[in-house]
Image 1 (spheres, rainbow, N blue to C red):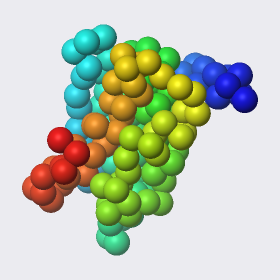
Image 2 (image 1 turned 60 degrees about the horizontal axis):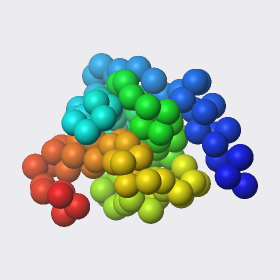
Image 3 (image 1 turned 120 degrees about the vertical axis):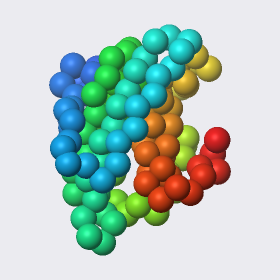
Image 4 (image 1 turned 90 degrees about the horizontal axis):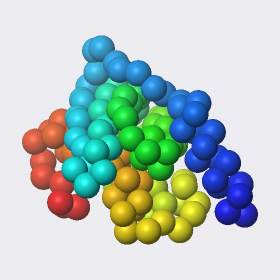
Length: 130
């Protein structure tokens, strides 16, 4: 089963979905992992009901960070702002489907950190995960 997830990660790394930027966007946020240099920006466009109609990411980094961003962008299509804010570490790890070392865990969770920071920044509310 790990081979399936490794292939999925490599596919999303080599052929990322939702790569790019959005203009206009409802929110955008950018951050990096100073330990390894991975950098990520996420743009999200919401409709009038607060649901994701489009999302995109740009950045550089290892296969885990880039695949995680691609998989997460795929997952959030149609999600509400509240659903974005409710996403957690386990949701991302389930998408990746493999065990990660603590260093790789930071790579995998960068996309979640960036997405949630943008989603909470939209309304000025604080992110309880920080």
